Image (cartoon, rainbow, N blue to C red; front, side, top):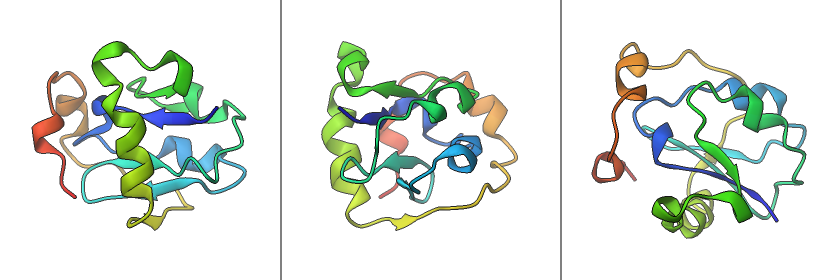
Length: 107
């Protein structure tokens, strides 16, 4: 099992999770993070660190977010690793309250 970043991360891109990851499995895109399933060791540390609750165990991903399991695997292959915490976007708190953001994902 691996962990999965879901739609809530889009346009928020807080990087608190990156600080606690012992294996550097996060990958950074233009407006979202994903987890490389080949690197994730299922440690659960990132889940509690995500301020918008965007990270789930693969078996616990909500039905409406199931597509993000494959999307994390796909995008992780092309996005670069992120190993240090960065400031979130200035409008991240506003985007954190927004639902239905998949169409805003930048690849």
